[in-house]
Amino acid sequence: MTNNKPAVDNRRLGLRGWVYAGKYTFERYLYLGHRLSGLGLIAYMVLHILETANRMRGEQAWAELMAVFASPPFKVIEYLLFAAAVFHAMNGIRLMLVELGFFLGKPQEPVYPYKSSVLKHRPLTYLVMILAGLLMALGGSSLFFP
Amino acid sequence: MRETRLWSLHILVIPIILVLLGAHFALMHYAPIFYALSVEKAREFSTMIARGKNIGQFVVYILLLAAGLYHGLYGTRGILRELPWSPALAKLIDLGILIFGIAIFALGVYVTWWTFNFELGG
Amino acid sequence: MLVAKTITFRIRRFDPETDSAPHWDSYAVNVFEGMTVLEALHQIKAEQEPSLAWRSSCRMGVCGSCGMFVNQFPQLACQTQVLHLEADIVSVEPLPNYPNVKDLVPDLQPLVEKHAEVKPYIIHPDLKEMREPSGEFLQTPAEREAFSQFTYCIKCGVCLAACPTAATDPAFLGPQALTQAYRYSADNRDSGVHSRRDSVGAFHGAYQCHMAGACSHACPKGVDPALAIQLLKRALVLDNFGFGKKESQSAKVAPLADVVKELEEFAPPPRTAE
Ligand code: SF4
Ligand code: FES
Image (cartoon, rainbow over all chains, first blue to last red; front, top):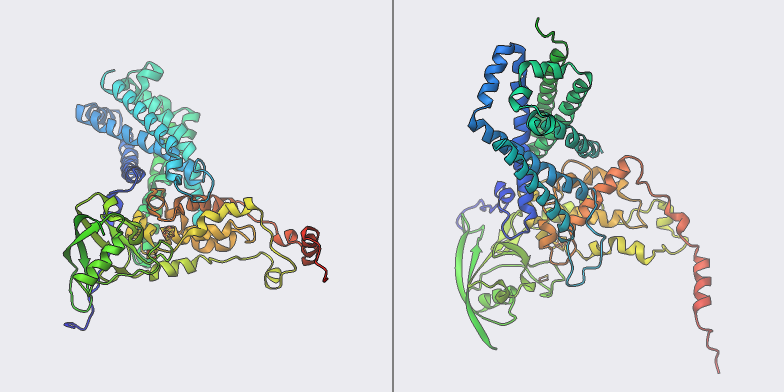
């Protein structure tokens, strides 16, 4: 015994546990994506409220601001926001249904080979992801190639 | 119990946001597709004011503001509060987010109200 | 025994009495087909490192002692065959998200405390009936099936090691306790989620589950904690809006005399002495 105070080995993963989804199913990446897109969207919503409040400074100030937003870099940012909103909305529809207990199947005896609720609602997961992909492609094409 | 109500509301506003934000997107960002209106035209000062003077638009925007801010800020609070704060700091986060939410909502309502009452050509 | 392969075990070592920080040691083990990680640990302890510490008992996936982080995945050492990992190097760590006692021994105290917090026992709506039952508490197979899956939990703690919320929030009740809260609430002899809402319906309860699904993927007993937690949320919401209250179960309890009569009707006639 070299020291009186025993060392502690804290194994709590911390933020790494949110980000690193490792060998778990890809729903854990959806969890991460949902979190990040959600934070991005609320931050944007607040900025958006502040930015559109600019109208109170008159027509001139408004027109100047809109001219800035019409520039290419803002088009890309706008698209990213649109994509985040689409992802968050589609994944959110899944979560809303699933977190209220729908599409998960009934509890059943775990006799091999059993399927967990994560696998049981996979069709829904695929469906919303395909929808998200389609909407993103649609939005992108109309935004960049009007 | 209180958390159950807060969470239920967080879920309940989802359909509202889906419909209203969908409409907002269509109006502002996809105006060419839905209204045969160029994005530039849709974002012009006079167009915006004209839109804002519509009572339906006014109500819808207040509703979207409330629903969107509540859903987003409740989610943010959840994420923040999953970090290991002391009870006092946790309370402070709750309070801070509440005050911030009310302030930004008030600003949004004020701007919407201002637009609603704006006289064009004045 | 047929030797199939030599595998290097990288084991995370930590002794709070002598070490200031954890370190990794490597051991080569001749692994035969069917050998489990637990058997490999026994072999290392017998032949190479007598001071290696871990916790295990039943070596058949029943006691829930041997949960470990093997190759970055939380699982039972006794149910994991080394060759099934398909790796030449196998890393073994104690379960994450728990304080560590020594080497591969996590301190499961938080799990036990959270388990106790959700009142994991039947709370009959009629206290008198529960203390002095006037008959048997009947249960149909369908009523049993509503929670049966969740009774297989062995409290191994693997699910909390997989859970992203548990990674940062020490107060989160976690998949294990929340699942048991639902297991009892869904029991027809119980008064339902109402009596547990103070713990599971609070901030660090059911709503901090975001359906990342890792617990259900990792659970070695097929308990599917994620399913239980979502059903728990639904029950909590229904209860909050006044739809969840269970009618008193005592009405459904058959008087003892009736049960005896029923049994007598089924039973073969008593044998008479010659
Ligand atoms: S739910 Fe599964 S993983 Fe969690 S403690 Fe119980 S048996 Fe272990
Ligand atoms: S030793 Fe009992 S579960 Fe592994």
